[in-house]
Image (cartoon, rainbow, N blue to C red):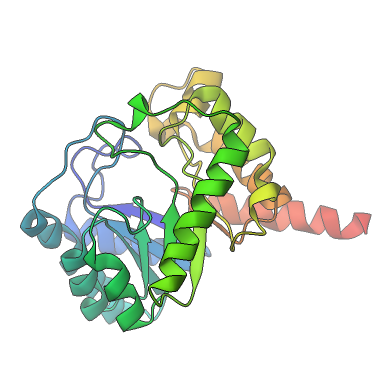
Length: 259
């Protein structure tokens, strides 16, 4: 899953996709490089980020989704917490709702997902981006994340959502050690629902490598991809599609020789 952040303040790419034509071009390049999905988001969810107005978010993402859909049939996920944005995105050609609040921020989101019969990605986060790093106490992080994701999956299913993916939320209400523990043990989450891992360019990689900017963390991000692959993830959500696809092709070819 290739990431297109249509924001001026993304931690990972410095706003390079804030220009709509550049965002569309990048999405098409990601598809050419081997992406199966394009994830489009218009609101930064980095730690401490403030919520933006719905109209602003719509202005950012809808032209990009429309532009991608005119050029390609690739699956598009809309990364949003707001039902109005998700609905407009689905109307524009998106196929999946990717909600960092696990459908809990906006009470209309579950109804929308069920009504439109689209898959949803439920990400684990406590609080909201502005406050999430104040909610980082866990008795045992993998078990606690698993329990909370299971409850939120069940809530979605009861609301009529048919297809659910889960994302443990690397970097969201997690410490450095929590992120590593989840990646090391992500196989323990796959029984809940198909697993999405989004570790690309995250802060813990910078902490380990000393790489301050997100765009310099591509190599370190591949270690997260390896952990996700080993743990049975269905989707890896990444900024560097070509490098990730090449890495997985070689890794899978080597693994095939070991069987």
